[in-house]
Structure formats: structure tokens, C-alpha cells
Amino acid sequence: MEVIPICAQVESDLSERGDDESKLFMEELGIDSSGLDRLTHSGYRMLEQITYFTSGKQEVRAWEIRKGSTAPEAAGKIHTDFEKGFIRAEVFHFDDIDQLGSESSVKDAGRWRLEGREILWCRTETSCTFVLTYSICLFANVMLQR
Image (spheres, rainbow, N blue to C red):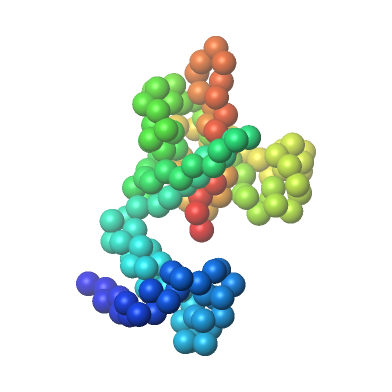
């Protein structure tokens, strides 16, 4: 069992400050994250959960799945039809898109690969595109929280 010390007064003070001020306050206290953040991360570890994000032109959304889930299972969290119609995942590292600037540049550089149904959900990758069987394919850009 993991013990996570939390000081209610510190958490209250952090909640009343902006991001920059909170960061300075935590540095002064010699801590690198709030008790709430440590508690949340510990809960995720204990429950073997990970968060991934879908992104589109108008929305970014977080989804939770069990560590070790396959890509089709992750797609199924968005919609059950996506799991059933899953064909493959187009996988690349988010660092590559950050460095190269676009998905097309990542493809052109040969840093994009195809994975089948059995791929464990983004073991080290930080971005995948689900390719599904529909007359109009849905491409969900997905980024794994580090």
C-alpha cells in the first residue's frame, strides 16, 4: 500500500493561486506536485488505468482504459462500433509530429507505421490513428498521456 501525505492547508492555498504562482509556491515548499496530483496518479497506478486523448478540429477529449488494452479495445471506449470495425492503427510518436510539424511530414520521414488488431494500446507510442471499416472511415488522432 502506498501512503500519500497531503496537507489540506497547502492544497487549499494551491487551489487559490494561478498556475505560475502555484509552481513558485511548490518550489518554495520543496515539492514538485500537489497532493491531489500525487493521489490521482497513485490511484491510476493501483487501478492499472491510463488516459489517452482524442483530438479533432474542435475538441480534445480524455478517455480512460486499462493498461495493456489493445487498440481495438481503446477504440471501443469511444464507440462500440469502432471496436467491431477496427482494421488497423497507424502509429507514430508524438515527439515526431512535434519535431516535424505535421502528420504528413511524419509519414514522409518514414516514422509512421501500421499495426494490426493485436497491438497493445500504445506501449511507447504517443499517437495512433484508428482505421475502421465504414464507407466513410473515421480517423481519431489519439495521444497517450505521459
